[in-house]
Amino acid sequence: MSRYRGPRLRIVRRLGDLPGLTRKSARRAYPPGQHGQNRKKRSEYAIRLEEKQKLRMNYGLTEKQLLRYVRRARRVTGSTGQVLLQLLEMRLDNTVFRMGMAPTIPAARQLVNHGHVTVNGRVVNIASYQCRPGEEIAIRDKAPSRKLVENNLQYPGLANLPSHLEFDKNKLVGKVNGVIEREWVALQVNELLVVEYYSRQA
Image 1: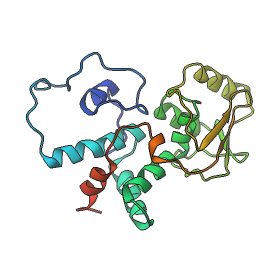
Image 2: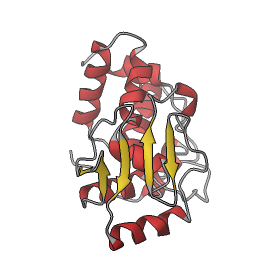
Image 3: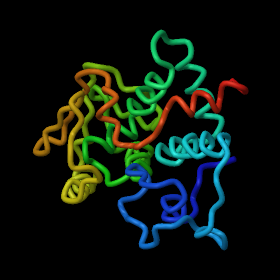
Image 4: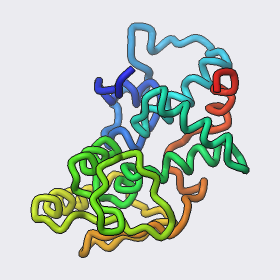
């Protein structure tokens, strides 16, 4: 299944606030569809599925990619759920978004894919690139790249810069100082339910 390209507000109405997917907020508070207003009690499986879908939609992943991240998180010592969130947050597209260079994660992915972003002075156009502490994330020193990001910086997606990042708006250069801590993850999600969801298939 390819990446979701449909109406984003439908997803927000169904799953709740997804800061990485869109900055718009839905006018209707109930889920979409004919029976959106009279939903029955959800099963445990449905709750886990919903939490998993939040991660998928917010970070713009395919099912296969998310499963791969869960397997990677399992191999690392520590809480699998927390490691999973750290892996997703340290992706290059998400780091560009959290620095305010793009209004949403899909917009940040486009910046990266189109070669506007450099890591330690070299152009990296792979959105899933894992940023490491000490790396410098910058915008290419070209007029179109800089203009694009300067426009985006006027309307950042999230107001607060996480503690593990620093960003110079004048030079359009940022730095990764460490790994993100759980409280700085903007998405409201229960990562343990996601790990439980995948426990039967991973």
